[in-house]
Amino acid sequence: RLARRVRELKKLPYGLGDTKSITQVRKMYEKSFFEIRRHAKPITPDLEANFTKLMDNMMVEHNNVQATIAAGLQELDRGRTDMGETGQQRLPFDFGQFLDRFYLSRVGMRVLVGQHIMLHHPQEGFVGIIQKECYPAKVCQHAIEDATRICEQICGHAPEVVVEGAVNINITFIPEHLYYICFELLKNSMRAVVERAKEKYPEKELRMGDLPPVVVVFAEGAEDATIKISDKGGGIPRSGMNRLWTYSFTTAGNTSEKIERLKDEKAKPVMAGFAHGLPLSRIHARAFGGDIQVMSMQGYGTDVYIHLSKMGDVEVAVP
Image (tube, rainbow, N blue to C red; front, side):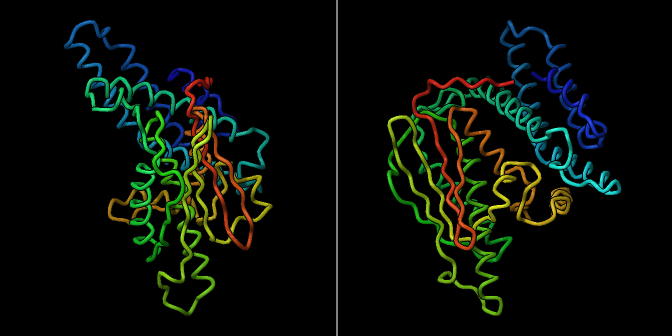
């Protein structure tokens, strides 16, 4: 898988493969590939321990791939501005399809590596990174707390989050991936609610009562567990719905500025603006047989449905 990703990164057209950021990702994958190939077969306890340490280091090194890829897309956009062409959607090559495949493969690799590492550090109720009885409401509560803290830090305020429905359902799932999905979607909803309130009351100091709550509803069906995140943040224009799942659509301002802020360790955390959160959340859901759907009413708000497969019998082809 590492070798295939390297080959695809080398073959990217329109100069994307030659940008500084994408070259950095490619070299990172090449380095990991050769380190694994050169490592002796882990047939003894010591070799196994060394191999596990190698895998652990590789996971850490690859943590910033998402931001680096986003930087590469920005470099491409800046380079093509002089030619009068900006945005992935104007290029004949479908970068979205490539990134979907790239990130799905990345999720698959991180699951395999994470599973190998955590099988050496067993936890009660888990098989590796898979929790046998994962309670989505509990995982979502952690995401709510973290998203609220970041929203307050960045926006100055955060709406209340109301949790309703079948909060006691449990499924076999990877809580880390469910947390990522909930966290990204909650950040979007909270930011939209605060920004709409500021537009509605431009001269007023916002209070909790001025921010309509974000509502999270849990439901259990025969095949899926479903989470609905509803906000009254003004919704998304109908013209933007087709671009919702692209890696260039964001309502959170300049992506390049957010990337520069990431490089500053003293800067505030970035709440949104990479244009990767929503499509990556859907990839995490689809990687395990689920899906994400978005329904929006401009002028009112947005409902996001997260479908999580309960059956465990869905095969997903990971490139």
